[in-house]
Image (cartoon, rainbow, N blue to C red):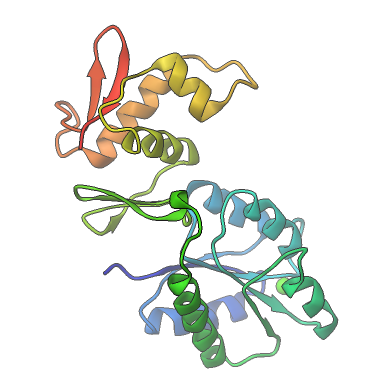
Length: 230
Ligand code: CA
């Protein structure tokens, strides 16, 4: 079992440091972002298993990050607030955070909340098929957390790499042309050079193939496109 990953978004360095210390001691894998922009940059690439999010942040605040993130992921969020009158907004329909902690708080209390939220969200039976993890050989894709692991190692994929891999793995042996992949993964809203697909396939091979120069999973079908073989 890999350690659960947690992203802490907190602009007060001493709080971020203490919280991350306690979480690391509790065997979590921890990253810290010190403002909303840094957090979004990290989240674009990878969604953690849980997010600890301070509300009062410079530039982009915790409310805005949550709204932005909810369009792409249902990752559990614990919000940190300094004000009791924010609690209704945090837990209400508007944001639907999974839990909140009011400052000042004890780090041990926060660690307990993290464990409880992870336990709860792990137990929830996904109502839709596409929320269940997809396994193919050593590869496991978690659509909810938007993570991919290979032999239990978390891979670092960009959002498009994730979408491309998920599409191919969920349609094994089906051949997609580059245009079809562009349309399904990048959408039709803007013009993207078809060689973008080639570049993404190459990067994915470097990440999931034992020998990227002679792939056995992400295969080129000459003159047509690409397919995935398990
Ligand atoms: Ca703050």
